[in-house]
Image (cartoon, rainbow, N blue to C red):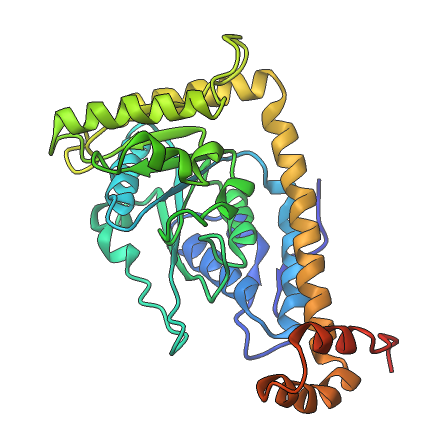
Length: 345
């Protein structure tokens, strides 16, 4: 499928020119720069940039959908970055091109973000067939950034056949990444807690594969954790029947620091991809995710339109002051604002 859009950004001199051809057809440093510019454009909050970003995504869409997307979540300190580097190096050795999208938490005070994940993947970051892009969460819940989905499409169009998404690592609320990837991997520590704690974790029932990392530190604890998590999965009903055409979530052990168990992990991923592709669940999952993405952007757009409406902006100072002083209930204030006619003026 051909597209008439060859570049995006001509209408705004402050915005670097984004060449579709440089993303799709080029390689090396030129492609890296084009991918970086494209993601920067997608992450921009300016209205005129959003229009250009939509044009870019439309032009890139025919070149997307061929990669395998893996979301990786876990508590801080579980070793996500170390594991991703070990996995990325292994995959490049197998002939793959790997894109890594890492999400760093943004400060609730300053709004800033360290974006230090790339420095923790020193070996992977210098590989020709790897691309690492850190992004701030900017207050977005669910462990991912607002434009992570768009960034994945850019990486796919650039020919990266494996896309890894590392979440911020905030714990039980990291569920958004499961709604935008083909496979959701949850990383656990050997001493993560008993099986009751495993059941309580909301992400457990979403996990396609659970990885107990740092198994080399305490083999007995790692084995116990694997058994407990497997038991918790059974109680959650994740194993279901023994139909060989269906994937049954499992728990495995590895040591990312020593690169032990990475091959076994990838074998499990390959088995998952083969089964999900054969039974049609992979295609269905992506279709459902695309529709969810559409409604998510509609919700965000409606909220922005509401906030920018002249009548709402005129009422907000008085109503917020009354709520702040306790003279009006928050629910009443919300109803009053939502009652404002939304006709365009």
